[in-house]
Length: 116
Image (cartoon, rainbow, N blue to C red; front, top):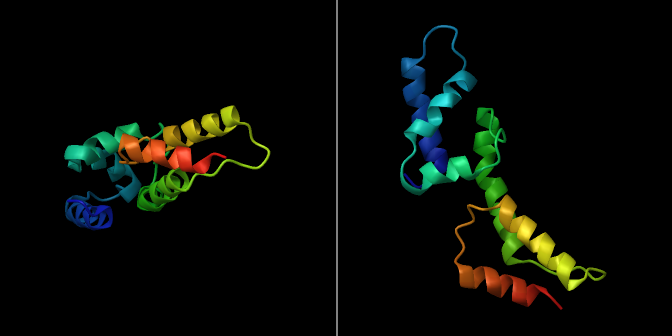
């Protein structure tokens, strides 16, 4: 499935049917990686370790990714920032959003257009 929210709701629905008494939804979170396939299966491990420990954090992940991708594609060098500093900040953004899905030419284009 390509819609994370739909996948989460289906996964939670299945887990609710299988849930044993006293097992919290957050405990079931450890089973979530096994429900993923394809690109999603590589996306989850690419996130920083420990950044998703609850369902709420997992549900917020798509908006966080979109925000980071937006920062990459709309990158602008700050007024008092050297080219080196801008490049390092851009690389940090790419590292934070390593699962951005942008093609290499788009990344170069965003950086080139963002520096003065």
